[in-house]
Length: 427
Image (cartoon, rainbow, N blue to C red; front, side, top):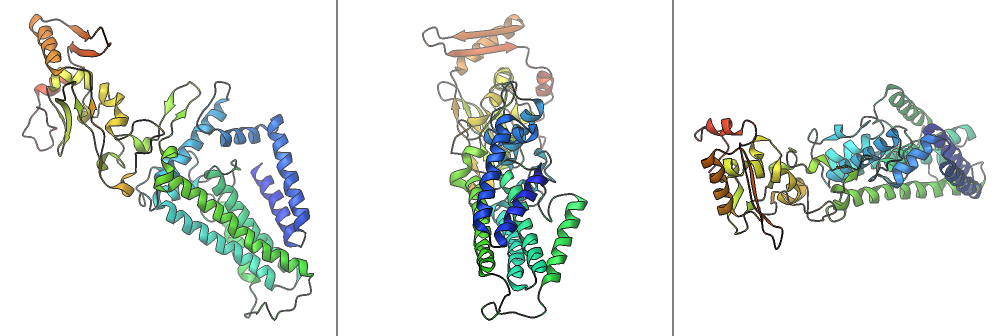
């Protein structure tokens, strides 16, 4: 379906280049109407699914097919990838583009944007625009009809193909499944792109020509149409740049960066780059502390890692982040501890844009003294189980002690060597 749409748009562009802009506009409106009807009746099914992905990438319904549900999630991952690049990107090889399916072909622009940022994406767009404008300029210079049509066609082909691919990645319009010239993986795509470049080079005039002094044996409408196309194409690429800026600039992009995607089974998935375990984030954010109801520190971050006061007593409740066990409150409160209160929050910035920052401290309803006494009772009487204390008037949990500790924690703590240089700190 993508190649067919590309061919239709190219024919409409060539019709404009030949001096028939009104007829081209009518044809474009007719094409949009045809695509709308095709989506409404669900034929072809692939087009219907791609429009549905574009309209709602953040929520998969129970009625969605498996392919549609996966497609929606992949679009969300593409938007996360682009947004995470920011202005300057994460750096070559420092991104996480493999999180996106078909990133090497359909979504190569998301990988570029993540690692090179908005500036890198703008550079790529500029290079493609130069190539497209070269084709249109050669069409104005050539006198013979075949060369003029060939040059304008190759220039428009490059511009339309790039716009469809990049615009699909930016969620400006539905995906088409076509490749990005010179960049997407694929032998035939790369070969055709270079062949088109070779033809454009061959169409270049042997000497410099002054358009003001040149006389053309073509109607004036052809020259005007080509001149208008040289305005329309840059405007189209400018729209792509503005959309990319909306996704990547710090003040605007947080709603996308932190938006959660709801899967078909009603579970939620978040941007993995915001995971506290992610190497792109964790080293730049100081994880917040966990406090008891009176403000006593239960867990805090030190230069050596997470410090757990009364670790054996509280580990069943808070977990052991230093061991890589994202369980208990360390997992449940992952967002605020890393500086995020909710998915659409605007308070988060990626490290390369904001530098090192600190997450929020969280005060629990747990009372450290009551927790300690409850644990001691379990230990003194040799009970295996859990004691939970709740304040009747408010429902607040005051203590939740349990024995034994999670599997392996007792043995790990017993063999803990505080003098070992890589040992995490415990009080």
